Image (cartoon, rainbow, N blue to C red; front, side, top):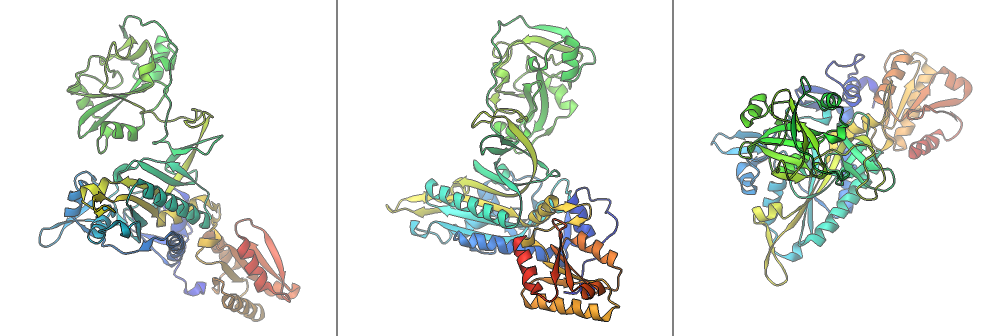
Length: 569
C-alpha cells in the first residue's frame, strides 16, 4: 500500500467532542469518522484492525469447537415477548414496525433468536453440547453515547451461545469460553483482568467480565493484593461489619440547621461518621426506594436493582420524597409508611447501634436509632460499594482499585431462556429436559479502542503488533533523490515478497510530516531510507513501542532481520 493512495485523512487538531485518547486518536489518525451521534464509519485502517481482531476471535472460538453462523439483525417482537424481555429490556432497544404493522427490534443481543433457531432442530441429548457464534453489528439506543467506540449505538460484537444437557456441561462450556477469551486478549496484546460481574439485562447468575486496564476506563474494579480475586466494583462481595456492642439508648430528635450532608451533620453533632447512616433515594417502576448505608460508605445502584427486582433506577425527584413524607438531606427510615416507600438497608447497618440519621423533617435528625427497635426495612442486603482497603471476601487481604474497559463478558444463563421459550431435548430415558445455556460476548470495536487506550503516547497510537493495521512503514526521506528513492522502493517490494504487511510513504512531503503521521498512526516498525542510508550502508529501523533504533547492514539479510524484530514485538 502506498500512502499517496491510502484513504486515511489525518487531522492536526483534536476534535472538540473527543474526550478520551482512543476517541481522539482514531479520529485524528483517519481511522474513523462520525456519521451521527453514537455512530461511526470505520475507514480502511480501522477495518484492517477490526478484521485482525475478528480473525483471532474466529481461530480461538473454532479451536474450542464453536461454529460460526449469521442471524438476522432484525428480530420479531414475538420471540422477545415469549422470553418476557420485550417490555423489560428498556429504552435501549430500538423498536420499529414494518409496512404491515408487525413489530420488530434491531438486535441488541441474540439470546431469543438463537434459542428459536436451536429449539426447532435439536431434539436429542445426542445433539448436545452445541456452541454457535456470530460476528455482527448490534444496536442499542444509548441514553448518552460517548467516548467514541466505547459507548456507541451501533457496534460490532462477537456473540456466542452454548447449549448443554446439564449444569456440568455448562460449566465445561463456560470454562472453554473463559479460556478462549483469555487467549484472544493475550494474542491481541492487551493487559487485562477477568473479574466477577453482574449479569445485567442478559440474565443468569454467573458471569465474568474481561477488563482491559486503563486509566480512562468507565468501569471500576477491585482486586486482591494477595490472591486472584477480582470483581467489578458493582459485583464485589462484602462481609458484614459488626459494630462494637453497646447498650441501646433512648431515641431523640435534635435540631441540625443547614446540615444536609453526612459530613455537616457529624461535624455539628461531634459524632464519628461511622455512627451515622447515609440515605440515597431512587425512583423505579415499583415506586420510591430509600437506601441506607453507613455514613462512610456508598450505595451500589446495581445491587439495589437486583435486591428490589426492578429494571432500572434513577435519582428520586423532591416531589416523590414529599409524597412519602420525607425531604432531601434529612431522610431516615423511622416512621415512614411502607406502602409509600421501599426501605432497603445495608446488612452492616443492621449491626450498628445508636445511629444518627435523618428525621424526615427539614433541619432535624434522630440520635440513638436502633435497627429492629425503631425501624423494620423491607429488604436487608449487601448494597454498598467496596472501597479500597476493604478485606478480600476470599482471603481477607486488603483490596486495591483500578479502572478498566470491559471488552468481553461470559454468562451462565442456565435455563432462563430455554424454559421460557420451551427449548427442550429428550434425555436417555426419553424425558423432556430444558437445555442449559450460556452466552459469551466480545465487543470487537471496543477491543480496538481499548488497545489504543492502553497503548499510546503524546505522539499517537502504539499498536500491538498482532492487530496493527500494517506492520512496517518504509519512509523515503527524499523522494527527489532518485537513487535512495529507488532503494526505498526495492526494500518495500522485498518486504512485501517476504509476506510482511508494508506501507511506503511516497508522498512529496517533508520528512518531519511523514514521521509525525507515522507516530500518529502507530506502525510498529519504521524503516527510513535516504541518501545517508546509501552513504553509510546501514538501514535505520525504529521500533514504535520502545523508541529503540536498530541499524541493519544493507549488505546483509535485512529482510530476515526485520521479520525477526516483528516476531519479537
